[in-house]
Length: 84
Image (cartoon, rainbow, N blue to C red; front, top):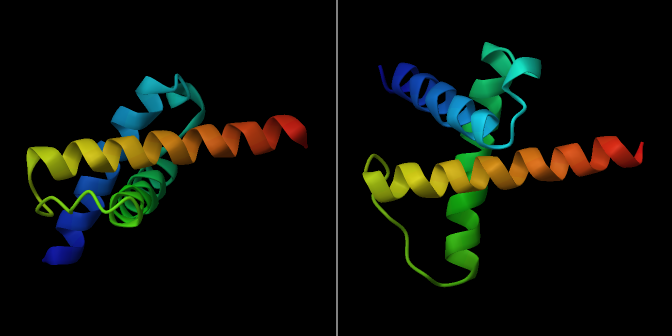
């Protein structure tokens, strides 16, 4: 059951992040899910690295941190692709 929640959460976070960086027309469902899950982990890791504390997993703060991490991930991927 929890894996379905993570997939849904990842899809929503990845979709919102792709809208923010204007890459949604190039991303599919699997890419949105991966960007959301990896972006969530990246956002939480950055908060931990900066010692700002961690929000609860399924909360508004956690959702915003996850979107921020996914946006950073998509921007880094875009920058790498431009260089190649």
